[in-house]
Amino acid sequence: MSNTLERASRKFWQSLKIAFWLTALLWGIHLFQVLTTIDFGTLGVYPRKQFGLKGILFSPLIHSGWPHLLSNTPPFFVLTFILFFFYRRAAVPSFASIYLLTGLTVWAFARDNAFHIGASGVVYGLVAFVFWSGIFRRNVKSIVLALVVVVYYSGMFAGIVPTEERVSWESHLFGALVGIFVAFWFKNRLDQDEKKPVWSWEHEPTPEERYFLDRDTFDKTKAERQREQEGGNDWFSTRSW
Image (cartoon, rainbow, N blue to C red):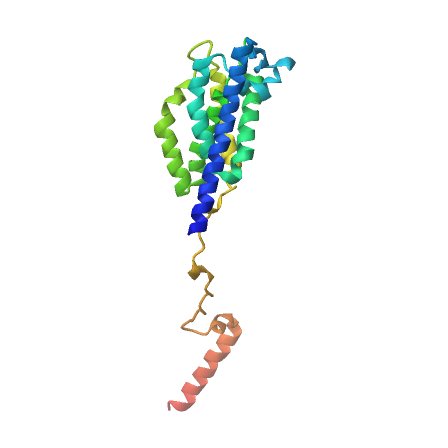
């Protein structure tokens, strides 16, 4: 019991540190941008232009201002923690896939009249991943987490449709679609607590089956049964009179 609690505590703090340092990276980059007055906006995704490909790597790290960063910080931190704590085996490939595929789909399909920046696409991917993992995995843990996401982040679904011209709703939409795909792709990469337990009685040998009639009765040919019947009739004819 103590070993289980120790492992859970270690996993909790490790997941918290990962979420903290990834969030701190966003803040550090934006603070550097503010202090140096350098505009990193051109490092965002610019759809279907070769120079816009670099945004696949850099766009989630760049924000247009403090309100933009502040709106993304809480869900990014919480959902990153949920991913690394509850889906440990799938966390790294899932996060990397959501991060890169969101940028790639935005580059391929979004509007080409602006740079797309911000971590909101990754946030929508994480929301979709946690929610749809509950549907694809269908175990108690994933279903509970899906319900939690619905309760706390249901208002975000309005962001996948065009609202403001300066908001990259395409990042939200494609991030959510990528999150669904990643949840399906890694649905079988289960943690130990998600696997179905094997009960002791399942290891017991199957008891020998007993039958009312001998099994070889049904293996006899029609000719053998006919001969037995004829032999019975002969006995009856000689003994009954």
